[in-house]
Image (cartoon, rainbow, N blue to C red; front, side, top):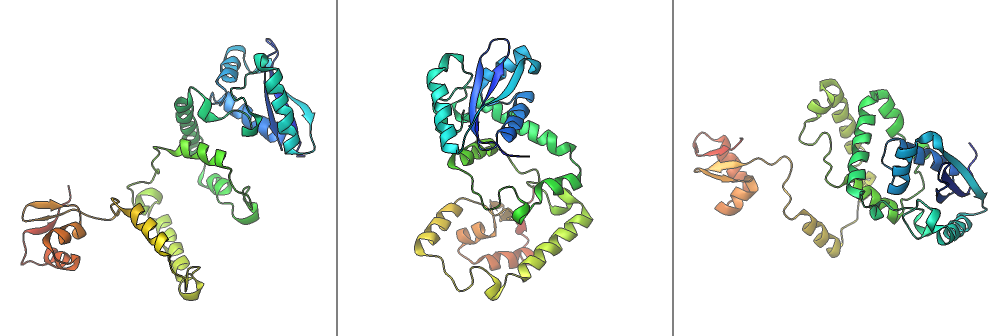
Length: 272
């Protein structure tokens, strides 16, 4: 489908109020707006409320003017925002943000939760083949190939993902994918690792700077490895082998040896 650069409006045929926006692909933007409105998660609370009240059939999506560049469309949208404020559903005062920002919406948290729920429901309805077709697109097949997210987009993605835990968190590969699939994944990861040794590794022959080492060290402070196990020694529980070793002034290998040895019955893993 041909891409159209310009400004567009989403107009209420009953009240004549409208939402104005710009895009380098207006048809694609129309589809996105419709999807959000139909699911009740549009970033413009005023447009969403009006859509819910009057119904989809009382709104029309119109291309207002085609432009030669995105910068031209931004200037034109700004003109409408400045001169037609009383007739707009827009909440942002600047067209430079690409329309409304989720962060400006008074129902921001509610919208984020509803978007997360909608995404989960959509994923649950997809077959494994559909998921692969939708998400496993590498190279030029990927819509983001050669592109980068803007700071605004990164901020929105960050807001959406805050508080979300991976669906496989705390689960083994077998629990998440089944025995057969987990074996395939392990083999695939093993093959990848074998092909990234020596001079095949992008970091081969290179070293982290002192600044990077400090940053990595600070980022790891307070983080517990996902595979660490608590241990109990002489009825005292420690968070891990390393934690016990630090407190007892020995090396972790000594703690591990004593746990496995029959000569140290007071050394054991503490699994609740």
